[in-house]
Image 1 (cartoon, rainbow, N blue to C red):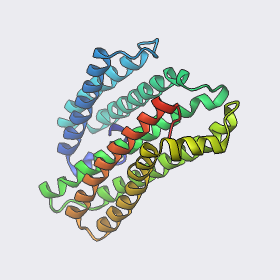
Image 2 (tube, rainbow, N blue to C red):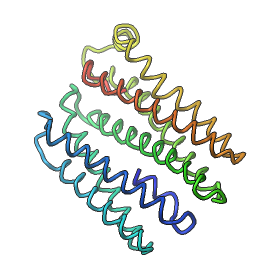
Image 3 (cartoon, helix red, strand yellow):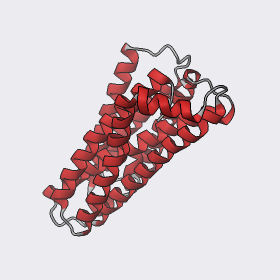
Length: 254
C-alpha cells in the first residue's frame, strides 16, 4: 500500500486519503508483527525481517503526521523510506524460508520473487479499493488518480501471473528427479482442489475484474469501479491463501 501511494500525489488529491492509507498500512504491519511475536517461525534464524517491518511501521506513522501538516517534500522522503523498509522486510523474510525448497543457485530467489509479487498485488488492489471511496467524499475529484491506481493494479496482476509461469517452467529443471509431468500431475490432479482455486481466484478472476474496473473508470463510473475493487480484494485474499497452502504442503511457490 505504501509503495502504491508513491504513484499519486497529495497535492492533487488532498492530505486526508494519504493519512488514512498510511494509518491503515501501519496498523496492518502492527498486526503482522503481533502474530510474528506470538507465533515465531522456526525457519527464520534472524530478527532482521521483524526489525525492518517495525521500522517501516514507525516511518509510516511519522509520514502520517508529516503529511497531515502539509510538509509534502519531507513526507515523500518518509513514504519512500517506509516503502523500501517494508519491501526489505518481505525480501529478508522470503530468503529465510528458501530452505523449504530443495533448490540451489539463483532458483532459490523464486520465493522472494513470489512474495514481492504478492505484496504488490494485495497492496495495489487494497489501495485502489480504498481510494474509490474518496469520490463519495470529493465528488469532483479527478478520475486520473483512480485510473493510475487501476493501471498499477493490472501491472501487479501481470507480474503475479508471470511468477507462477516462471515457477512452473523452472522448478522441474532445477530439482533433480522432478519432471514436468510429475509437477503437473501433483498440482493439477492430486492438489487440484487447491491449485485450481488458486489460479481462478488468484489470477483469472482478478484479471477479469481488473479489466472491468478499467472500463468503468474510463467512463467515470466510480461507484461501480469501487464495487468491483471490493471483489478484487476478496478474490485476491482467497487466491493467496491457496498459494500459501500449496507452498507449505508441496513446497512449490505458485
